[in-house]
Image (cartoon, rainbow, N blue to C red; front, top):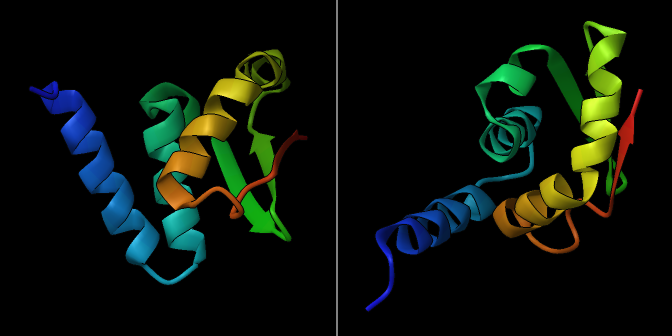
Length: 90
């Protein structure tokens, strides 16, 4: 038996991956990957596999740096392994 959270995560990822690439899809995946607190204080832009992350307050940059590898794995799960190759906090 598979835990429900694993099932739900896979279903959500499949739905997100099927959507056409757009700023809205990227923002939605970012919100799912980082949670509401960090999503509220950041904006993202995806170009050529690089996700640029801008925070409203520079104090968030160390948190983004610290979480990069975890967030990158989550985004690759949601958007596909080649969609995001690097996260660039600004």
